[in-house]
View 1 (cartoon, rainbow, N blue to C red):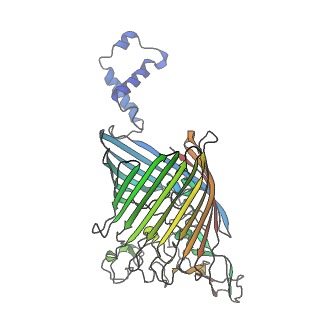
View 2 (cartoon, helix red, strand yellow):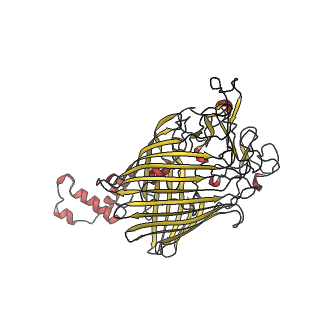
Amino acid sequence: MIGGLLSNTTSRLALVAAAGLFMGGVAMPSAKAADLGGDCCADLEERVAELEATTARKGNRKMSLTITGQLNRMIMIWDDGRDRGAYYGIDNINSSSRFSFLGEAAVSPWLKFGFEIMIEADGTSASTRVNQLNEDGSFSNTTYMAANVNSAGINNSGNSDSFFGDARRVAAWVEHKELGRLTVGRYETAGAMGTIDLGGVGVVTGFGSVSLLQGNMSLRTKSINNNGVVAPGLIASVWSQYLDPAAYQARQETLRYDSPAVHGFIFSASLAESTGSLAANTNWGLMLRYAGEHHGFRIAAGIGMEHYGDTYIPPAASATGVNQPCINGNGAVCASPGVSTFSHTPPDINAWGAALSAMHVSSGLFLQGSVQGVQYNNDTSHTTGNWGESCAASTAAGNVIGFPSATQGLDSTCHAKKDAWWWQLQGGIAKNWTGWGNTVLYAEYSKLYDWGAEKDTGRQFVSGTSPPSQGFVQLQNVQSTTATVLGVGLVQNFNNAATEWYLGYRNYALDLNSGATCAAVITAGNTGSFTTAGVGATAPNCKIEDMNLIVTGLRIKF
């Protein structure tokens, strides 16, 4: 707590006086000690002011101020079925490096106000931004080799500086002891529940998401012989497009209410990002959580849902490359000529999630998991990016369902996204065998369904920035996807240092519908049954290599 030591004038005077009494080991004569009148206090106040001028301090003495945070850096070792590598010192986005400023002040025993400002690392050296082609990371959401120097995200163009720059939370709150807390600002919304981490493994497994350790890694095809050879090349698509989008309880500019705990239950609700009527164009969420102990078991559970209705208003790129809004729907700068971006169809996305966790307190055995699902309802809408609602090879929003994707540069139709869902289960034992803190041994298993699929003829991962001519494989006709994630590992706590060391292994596997195809350009020396290099080859029943990952790192809290 900053300022706590010197928050009271009397105690500050006492400290300075005590220091003066015994400076140099010589006590003040008794006559002097008894003489506390005159200008002594003014001198002491002046000295206190000099000391305060040399130290960091808060702006006032009424609102408390606490600085807290964590650093979480790791080593990633990956194997995509053909290539492998190791990246050192990257940020672990399961629980990113960050620092926070927290404050509160009580008006009465029943009422208090407070704030939170949380800033997290947002550089390119992060587990969600590195990939096989770029160990320095990229702000691009997909892996690609850009065809011209004006395109962003060209691989290996140089080391990118890492920096802190993302406002994770910027919010103020007021709390009444019996009525609850009201928060306004940038904060997590109420909504679908993710896994509640009683076992203490979320630093390596994630908190209800499996896409934050290697989501920007490209898929790789297996070699296929079917009237030709499609080499085991990188696909113009990344793993996060087939895993959960880590979207539940998304941070937005919001108004959120949290009730007091009643018999272990807390109810939450939020409103956010409204662009029109409260009913039709607002993002809202509801959530009910529970925590308690019964018969030697620690129990935590939750259920929630969230709705996205905020209309997406994208900029449109002009011929000069400058982004500008398309207001009247006319002109070449419009993503959809004749349709204003300010009249896009409002989304109607509904997501839900439930979680249940239990730990046997005396033995340390635990089991925890969650399930989430989403209905997109976007057959005649525009993609918004919410809950992974993108189409074709794009990872961005703003494409019109039923039309060629505006971000492709190729004739690739954007189909409505299939509804998707997934579940996760984790279990293990957490016990303080060493005296340092809990040693947690765990295993995990997850299944994810249709996050990368579209309706009708399926999703077309056809990219103008990652074309076959530059060695990428195009994945087409994706109508169903099933991803499987299997992992084991350990977390060692060091309580006296507020530090965790973790080590985890994961295998990611992906199965596609039988009609999914891989398309590539055959190159010299890899022509298979083709006789001419440069001839296109398409193989049905496309198979994807597993991705294997080992991570180890430290999370240090302060």
